Structure formats: structure tokens, C-alpha cells
Length: 146
Image 1 (spheres, rainbow, N blue to C red):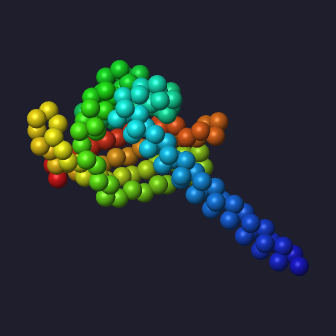
Image 2: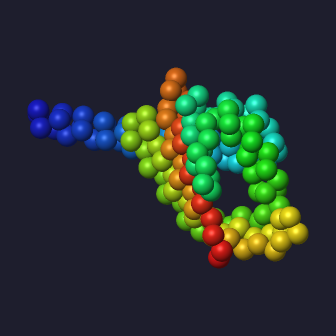
Image 3: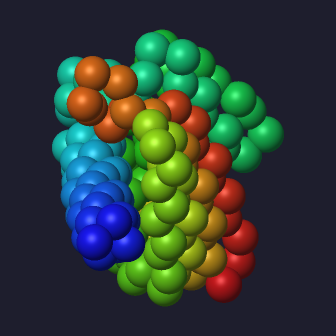
């Protein structure tokens, strides 16, 4: 009887952890989608709410704080993404407790600043969950010719 109870308890806990991970993964992806939309729409208020207070954005040869990013590259990133067609090649989401990270590879193509571009883009985003909300703690974007 004790073995059956232990097995049932183990299965219940395992299922609960699995369901929580799926829910967290969905919430993480929603936060990333909302962030992309905020960038494209130049909605700095929405982006500010999605970024953790200590967020760092690594792009090109710079590392920016949340405030620096929102004051500088945020708007040019929006113009750039608005001009590009984005085809997602791969994406993986990892959740470990209150930390998540997402790796993505995309193909970007379009015309920006009168230049025809075809780029391979890599992205690593780290999120942390505080007060039941996933916020972006770190972003690393890199791209090169396709």
C-alpha cells in the first residue's frame, strides 16, 4: 500500500512540475512576443515594463543598461525590425525554477537604409520570474550575412 501511495504521489508531483514548465514556457514566449511588438511599435512604456530593472542588452560591440537601451538603440531597432521580414529557423526554451533562457536563430531579409539585406540572426534572452511575472534580464543579439 505504501508503494502504491508513493508511486501516485510521485506521478502527481511529476505531472504538476511538467504542467508548470509548459505554463512557464508559454508565459516566457508571450513575454518575448510582447517585447518584439513593443520594439516594432516603438512602445517604450511596454518595453520598460517587460525589462527587468537590472537588464543588460548586448548588441554589436555595446552593453547597455535598460535605461540606456530605451534611450538609444530601442527606437532604431524598431525601425530596423519594421523593415525586415523575419523567418524563425529554430527556437528553444529552457526553464529552471524562476530563470528561463531562450535561444533563437532567424533569417532576416529586407531593405533598410537603402540597402538590400539578408542576415542570419542569433538571439539569447534570459528571463527571471519575480512576483509571478517573467521579465527580460538579459538580451544578446548578433547577426551576420546570410
